[in-house]
Amino acid sequence: MVSTAIISEPQPSVREPPRPPPPAVAEAEQQWIFTEEDLLQTPSIVDGMSSEDERTFRRKGVNFILQVGMMLKLPQTTLSTAAVFFNRFLMRNSLKSRPGFKPLHHYQVAATALFLATKVEENCRKMKELVIACVRVALKDPNKLVDEQTKDFWKWRDTILYSEDVLLESLCFDLSIEPPYKIMYNMLRYYQVEHNKRLRNAAWAFLSDSCLTQLCLLFTSRTIAAASLYAGARVADVELPDEDGKPWWDVQYIKLRDIRRACNLMAEIYEQQPPKDGEASIYVGLRTPEEDAPFGTPGDTTSAQAPGNDHENGNGKANDAGSEEGELEE
Image 1 (tube, one colour):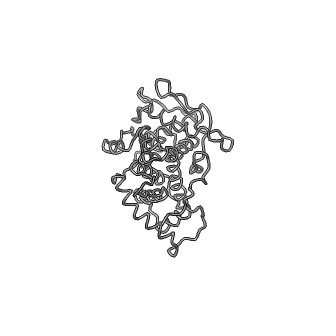
Image 2 (image 1 turned 45 degrees about the vertical axis):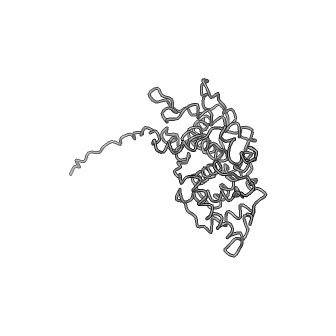
Image 3 (image 1 turned 90 degrees about the vertical axis):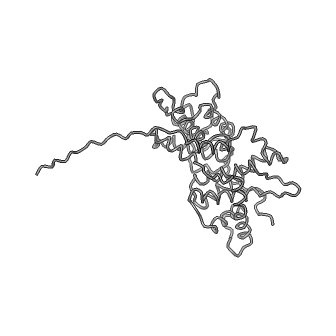
């Protein structure tokens, strides 16, 4: 008997065009976007701390989050969310002591931000595991014995639980964050370059390095993701196509000037870091004029960092994450 079934030819997949962020989401994120002048008027700086010291405490706090996260095998999206919570908290709270006011230690804020992020991103860990990892990182002793019989365990546990309410109030319970990693990967898939390892690694490195900066306070997640895509395309010598006469950044609903500013700020911080494995930094030559001049062409120079090494600080050193104040005060 001859089969009469009709064999249909496979249809080519149709790309779904990018959509602008929902107005409510965009409005909520915009209230946490500041100017560079605002970053010089944070509560800590107003209370007398130098801007350089404040940036150092921010970097150490985020480094603490990254090291504890690695111990707990948390995904990068969770660590990114914790870093955003940490930086937003410091826009409304001071780390500087003053008469009648004792601030939270930056490690306390970082640990609490990570605890909250694990719940928001649904990557929860047991409180005991989190506390043990925090104590070991704070004291710079990865083999330290920590359990319910030690004073440090209960001190950190009580601090995190108490500080969670303080953090939530400072964040106005605004916990909706879309990590730039997801946006960046969606962009890679849209342009069908997600299998380009060199591009993907460079974009990932850009995002991981940005966690140690204040970029999340200056630009939206979508802009940071687009800046990472440009940096990766430049390293991999990939040209992203226009659509209907519109450049790719317009297709993705992002302003070219914001991409340039984000790239320039990252280059300013990281372009002087020493070569890694004989390869120049992805930030060398990344600077472009913010106005008028062409955006440059991908593939000028350099190659990418591997994403596995991006929990380090801007100088390529991971072991200065802790300050001298590893133990919490009584």
